[in-house]
Length: 117
Length: 108
Image (tube, rainbow over all chains, first blue to last red):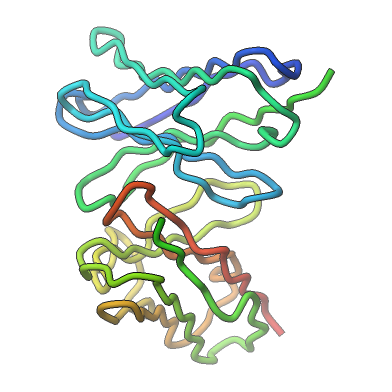
């Protein structure tokens, strides 16, 4: 059974760094691209970037300067790190599996993040 | 970036009614790369239609999609109460992947 689960801090202060872990089961990270998508009140659903099955990454230029995606295949985990957080980064952050052609066929339940002092 | 313009932004429909949502892209997209998701309140987006017209696993046959180039559509042939949700189109053709702004479906 394919499962994805995000874990994150909940609350982050402005200018600080956000770290979220996506733990997957039921499939191998070396066989699929893994996506990060966020949903904010201001911009709706936004694609942030992905890590390919081979381990290389691609980012949305909107986030490129402050976003990093990595993984640990031995732990079946994918990581999102984003620095210099602002209040408008408040939202729900999802990891998703890409099957092909950009199709996101499995999603985590999302990690809710509030950026506030 | 490819902008996806979804319309209408909201629909109020009766049970059993047919509804259609349109997604227009700012640049041509191969039909393989246009997908539709359903998001119920408090839940993650769920894949409904992929590559324009293929139903995802377990999706009822009342859901369908069509289109090509810059114009795509998503149809529910007979709306049921469980279909109340927001629907999004998404393109995976070029970086950045983009989503439409969503269409909120409510029941009359």
